[in-house]
Length: 492
Ligand code: GLN
Image 1 (tube, rainbow, N blue to C red):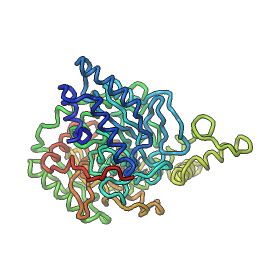
Image 2: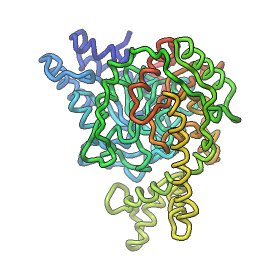
Image 3: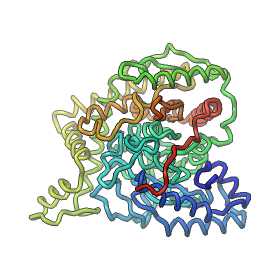
Image 4: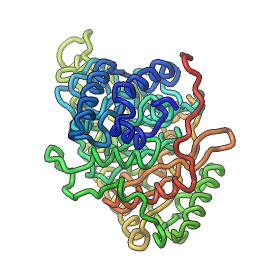
């Protein structure tokens, strides 16, 4: 087996035993990128030189046996909204082309301290706004299982890279589903931690009360190893919490006999693709076979209002967060302007894509005086009701199981002209962000036409340990994780 095809879990053991070197592994991944990324398009920036230098440093560490962590020498890719000192960070926007951050995000600092190798920066929807990666202003990313289909979004580059083996694992960010939905479309594991579990310092903000960085990997164990390194309190992010995390990896194998799983009817309503429904229901049956207690009688009655509330709150926050891109402080500046105000206007008109502009306008409108109570405050109230729905269900259940997305990966162009149709693809992931909960997408099978489908598992706040354990147990009995699409090399 080529090194790039192995799991993070195996590779870290092979590295620790000295069977392989970090340099060999990194060269294998870089070769794979050169061979197949022309066809898939995950990477905006490949940092060959940096990766080789970090691999050499990791080998010294591995040889001495000191300070070795499960990530020492492991090649990882990062969604291009996570700040990397000196390495271009674009948010897939013309606005930030050429921007080289002065500092590393906290997650990047933690990865570097653990000895990880950073291969480069991955494509996404511009400023993480979208569900297909088609909103990237810089390039197109294809689904490795079917290159006529989208990889999902907004972390489409991160999930396609894991599926195509052009990184051993990656980080994405999830504001309304942007890790779980593309993980489902690309047949990989993607996890959104509890809001506050992972520091957002250095994550370029979209909607600050919803954004959360999380792992994307081939297996649940790989995701647990990665979460173990990036999670934890950070004094630079006042919303990061000081609750000690469990040892996610070591606790995966505890059985789930007697664990209570809720299945809410609202997540199986009209619009759900029948093949997706069949696969998710089958997964529930398999969990029952290993001793979990399934309760199909739970209800999340405010689910229908989640998308509307999300698109008010997320756009309101985005309109404020994106005010900083004015041509003065960062990146792009229009050079055909007549005076300061014209420069602001033209910079924003030329630097942002249509979806970003649409959201800035929507958010600005919702926050305007006179409309605040009708829209923003109302949406906050709905957010509270959705959170209470979950609290009630979790009074009785340990986790909730649901589909991730109503459909498998759709074709390019299918939804891009209709923003509302695109927004609806997040209907099953958004409530989790509104309530700040941890959730994961684990592969649960393929449609007849060969497209992967994910199973969503949702847990109580800070119950990542339980979440990962259920996901791991399911993965062992279902066996869908770890599959790779056939990709001809060299096709560009
Ligand atoms: N697709 C959703 C949106 O467009 C979610 C994006 C995200 O999670 N970053 O807002």
